[in-house]
Image: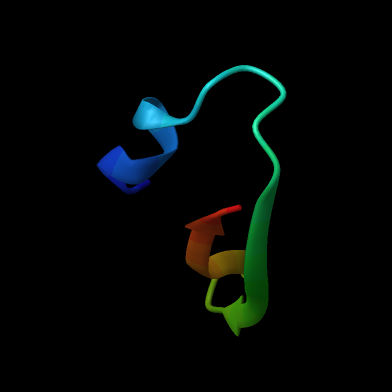
Length: 33
C-alpha cells in the first residue's frame, strides 16, 4: 500500500478509481477531498 493511506485523517473523504490487479481490485489514484 502507498504511504498516502497513512496520511489520511480518520473519516477523511477520498476519491479513487478501482483497478483490477493480479490480486483482485485495488484502489488507484486516491485523492483526498
